[in-house]
Length: 129
Image (cartoon, rainbow, N blue to C red; front, side, top):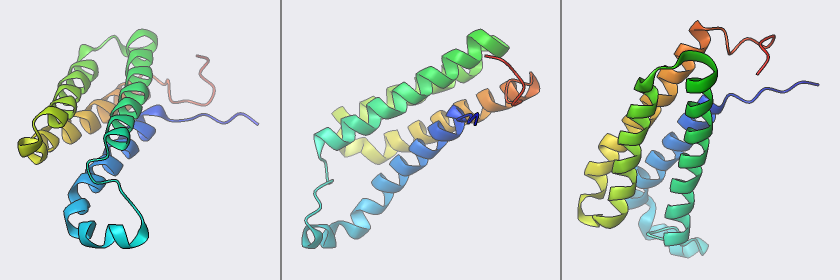
């Protein structure tokens, strides 16, 4: 059985999960301690999500660049979004502002990378990597 993982889809999913985590946290914050959950500004969780987003993005976008399309646009969008994602860790008072730029840039990078690969048929199950 040949299973092919869509790394751009994984990248978009991790970005959406991050956005949901940061966006819904203020709403569910009062009840989290009742369930023993401590993901509020948990440095391990926050940096873990950032590292995960970077690893997935780097693999997907670098692979797409070198193997399929040679366009700097997805890489540039991803790096710009990643700068905002890391900056939110150091400027907590501007966290939501930085996220408002980071998440769309990272999602756009993955989406464009996917489209460029699809255009060049790298998403075909018969294409050899």
